[in-house]
Image (tube, rainbow, N blue to C red; front, side, top):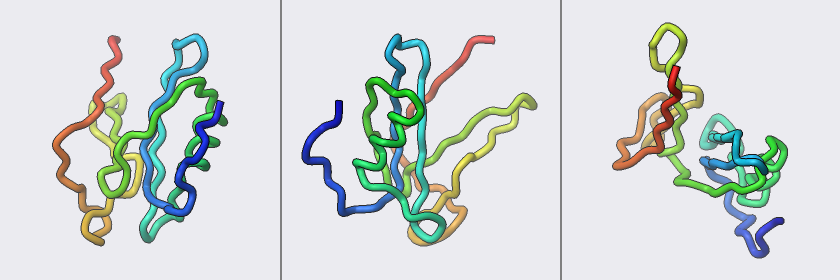
Length: 105
C-alpha cells in the first residue's frame, strides 16, 4: 500500500527502515544527495523500499544527518555513504540520536 499525498517536489538525502512481510528481514537504506547524487523524493523512497522487499517502512531523519556505518569483520567502523555537513564533503554532522542495531554472534 502506498501513502497518498507524499511530498514529491523535494529531493534530499533520505534514511529509511523497513521490515519484510514476515518481519524477519530488516531493510535499511540511506540515499545521498548534495553534490554527489540527486537524492530522492518520498515516492521514490517508497519505491526503493518496496524494491528491497519492505512490507512496512518508515522514513527517518534525512538531510546531512543521513549516515550509515557498519562494523567490518576486522572490527573497524566503515561509513557506507558520502558525508556532508554545511557544504563540506566528508564532514559528519553532529546529531543527538541514532538507530543502532546489534547482531549477536
